[in-house]
Image 1 (spheres, rainbow, N blue to C red):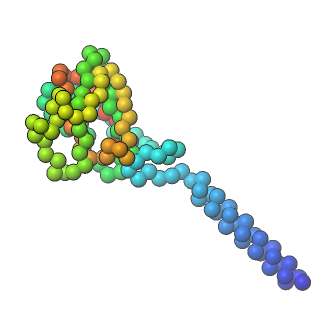
Image 2 (image 1 turned 90 degrees about the vertical axis):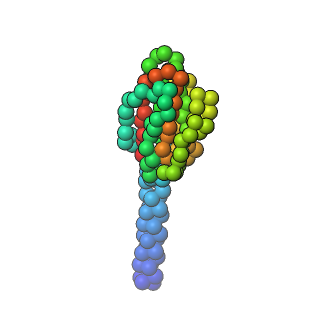
Image 3 (image 1 turned 180 degrees about the vertical axis):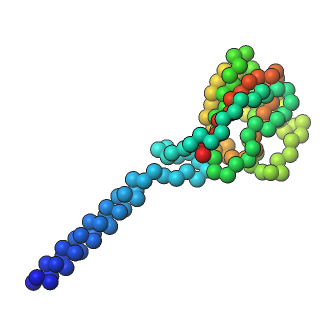
Amino acid sequence: MHNMKTLQIISVSITVAIIAVIITLLCLPKQTHGESFTGSASVQVTASTTIVGPGVQQIFPAKIGCTARVISTVDGTGTGIRFITGDSASFVLSSTTLTNVVGLHQAGSTTVTYNSGTNGCGRWFAIATASTTVTLVEYQ
């Protein structure tokens, strides 16, 4: 009887320990894998200000594992930008790839967060009808 009771206590203790480990693992912060999930931690890794004008220019380089990119058109002139996202190092620009009427549009004096699950972490290029200041922030 004494051995049976000891065996039951050990079995219950092991079961409780396993449940505690599982609960602990489920409560740990989730790691991001190239996309921003609700409740997951992200860290700002870059922030810069640049001027986007009539000529096409790269605004973000290709990165592995970004979670989100934020673009703010901040100069107050109301000049928006058009941009295109590319995931390939072989992304080739031509006059038809990105123009003032082709590409994603972001209005002037706005801040928009772009989730990498939708837009990727590849190279991004932008153009504007007139020179405008933009702030670029990247999270990982």
